[in-house]
Length: 318
Ligand code: ADP
Ligand code: MG
Image (cartoon, rainbow, N blue to C red):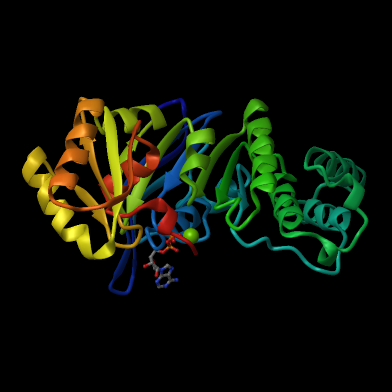
């Protein structure tokens, strides 16, 4: 086992009856870094999080967290693990402070220490002003921060975040990003799942894209974008013309053109962007196809996602 890996997952499979939620997945997370786990809905992200955090015993495979075999020694592994899920598990009638103190008591932390730890976390998560209000008065973002706080009470070295910002408004999302960066600077290892590519781009040092229980691609954001080739030409045409346009461009450029019915966008990779952009414009004009949008851009993670899963990530709303 590599010394720098805080999380090691080897060949993990999870079947639910006939559903192969995970089909032999292997990933690693480096100590003190953020590792991203991306994938469309139903890809198996939450299932893998459950396996890694001892909540689910996999059908087969090996998992260790902080050097502890999670499957053989779940109780010990849990001491190293913090987990915050997509749906904040917060009791409406407790205050924020009471919630954190209660979690601390569950970990058998002495009362005085628990109070101090709760106050620290409330401060760190910018909840001090709301600390003594019942959580039923909290906004979605505040609940999510409190849930994150609960996962931090026992100062875990490895933190698992399952879609920590899904459904939050952009400002609250940025606030959570800052908190996550803060934790990393304190030496915490983070594995997070996300539906937002810009989130993975902004936070993750390394990422894995999974689809239908299989690993489809891995790398740094930079490497994944580079792997696509230089630039991407993207255009949007009327729905009825997608097929015709695709055929035309494939004939002209002798390469596969990606198309997406839902967003009505077609895209192709290019090594000499400017020239090819003009070529596309001319081909469309000659064929009397009107493009609503035509652009040239550096590959984004969304282009990577489209290439490996056949879908734009922005369609994936839960
Ligand atoms: P994601 O978090 O990436 O959206 P999940 O891990 O929740 O995906 O689900 C992966 C697949 O496993 C889906 O097809 C889902 O329906 C299935 N699945 C997840 N949990 C269960 C379960 N407890 N019983 C049966 N099928 C499940
Ligand atoms: Mg999920």
